[in-house]
Image (cartoon, rainbow, N blue to C red):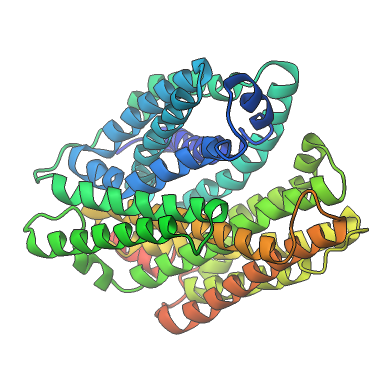
Length: 478
């Protein structure tokens, strides 16, 4: 077991991993117009600079979690950074569309190894101390909004004052630093006997990737198109085959009975709906600031800072105490309900609005809800699994959040377009479309609160400042 000092240094690397995985989804936004000009992207294909990363990330997360369990979390954590470094270098050097998209997919594959192994390492390092586990999860969770906001800032600064390839090159020194420090601070762990279940890995990766592909592609080609439904049908067939394979194998990639663990399925549903509500809000709030209020990229990133700061403070200072006092279920339900209220408030944005009246108060309410719901749902989902299946549980919960995010963003995109959100149209129609997206996101969050209230089992509140009951149970088994 690592010393106390080493454990907190290791947590810093784990939080940095979460920061980088999220930053890599947001840092490219401002650079896209120049990438289009230099690399020859068509307007239709430009969004795939983002989508290629998301499809690979979402499709490979379960495999990444299983590899972490079989071959050791530290080994997969390091391998993920090597792959991310290689993808980042290739993305920056790319001289054409195909190379750029392939490099982004490689980055997503690296992130799919980093994310579940990072959570497994966190549970290994802090699982024996429930108080510290809750604090560690809070710091890990706070790194995500920090990465999203930093990506907007850095993307604008780098594109404006350096050049767009550096939005990818910035990953390289960070990856080298992590690879140098990881052996000194991370627990070594070890390989575990077991088969990899390559057929199961192939079918679930294909099924998840096809589902995410269809979801992110549907707003471009239409939800009613034959291509959308053929790809979705293929995803269903692949995932059904995966379930059948898992039921038949003695050593499956994902033990289906894992979902019998108390609260694991319910907590993953909460994470899925949380992502489906939160990511569209973040996306369309940024568009409202830029396309309706007339903010440029850098000021729009600054406008998101109050919300980001509140989320980080809420996750680090408020959520652990609230979980210790009230238990995880009340916090998940309350957080989703508060998020729904904030999103509903954002739905009243006006074409002639301003930041102080139309954005700031509602976004802070939404941020408070996110900070209350994220940590207990994440901790419950991971803590409900067996210690030896921590990587799998981490892969499942990451998959739930990412697929929920993709599904929510695609659905809210269709809703916004149906309500008149056309960048070439008038401001009233554009605002009406964004308002519809905020309303839809509010409904998703409200549904999440209701589902959590009826599906999560009530766990007794732990002593003030301790982890959730599920986390404490997992720590005791470890």
